[in-house]
Length: 582
Image (spheres, rainbow, N blue to C red):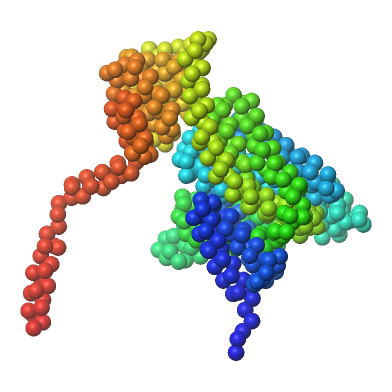
């Protein structure tokens, strides 16, 4: 007798179609996220054929939200944020404000409420973590200054959205016409508080929750994880990670009235302070990915494709805000802070899309009756189309940057004011280390241990402060600029180590340094064979590529270990064993 199994049918249809559409999206060089959303559209109520259970899909999406926010908290790095705080914090705040105001202006033109416009504007202001990180990783920008600024900017956006997720329900009662603003909170209703009281009570609950997490969770969660790790059971460790994520999220909602998203985010943050956080991230990744897929499928189910035909002009206005409005705001902010145009363009391209938080805001806006259905459709359509177009934005960036560099080189070749002179270091027979990140720091520590004189060229204020505190000579700036490289005294130097990952800038440094000192020993890093050949053709003596060095180290380890005679004797012993058995 067949059983009615809507849960199984929803999961199977959601994951199955997500795989098919995700594979097709990948085949056509779109992010798989686009395929997951289209899979949701296919099983939604607005398209013919099978229709998944929307109520069950919404509950599964809640699990997806919890695990997504847990992952955000797990990878949240205060250190990364602080290293670029001077640009990331004010930049993200201004960009969110500009995009939100543009979204509210569009919503006002369509006759929505202020609350609906606020949710709509916030949803358009925040970029997708998944899409942005994927784009940076594909272009090997994660370890560059541009990449660090983009990630720091994203962290600020995520924190702002976490706060918005907490405050939106407190404002939701403004939609009701009875004026009982305290109805958003049962405790506030009991004491007859107004909107100000509701907000103060909300902040008080958040404060108590944060205090409990910082005082108790910060110690208890890592301790539990370490205890389970010592049992040696991988299965139990994986279960502990998931139990912490789901348990803290659910408990925070029941005990403190904060959102599931905020509880999961703090669970991830507390777990991220443990030395086992990397392992926790790896163990929870498969389930996080699976439920994240169901979350995107659930978001796609809410989208009505016919809305594109019914209301094309609001959709075009929404896309303009996502692709150009907030990107232009970000570009102007980065340039105003005197960062290179290449950095400003990278940040702009990174932010020209919306994703996970936008869907979460759309879900909460719909559930609290703040956001009309048309707003939800515009957010979902804007997300799908902007994510599809984002690779084209980066392709345009890849096409534009070399031309801007050539133009800048042509301008530099023309008579122009001399760059500001930087005092030349008195060091001689020294090593110049360009870039003091993960690679450069290891080189510097090795030089210190051997007693070799060296100086570091760096742009990060935090790293420069650490070097100065350690008594290491530094030069601030981009070594590709002639005045900065001249200050390192390359004519009297013994060696030059270029530890930055940008092959284009590294090539400029190699070329200038070789011209200044033909006898200088130049060592650089690269990520591909093409980059190796490029840097060698410009004059680098040695170019280190990570994959080659790992393989070389493995081969050297095999060569240093004497061969084990046991395998050679194995056939003889096996024959002897057969004779004994016979």
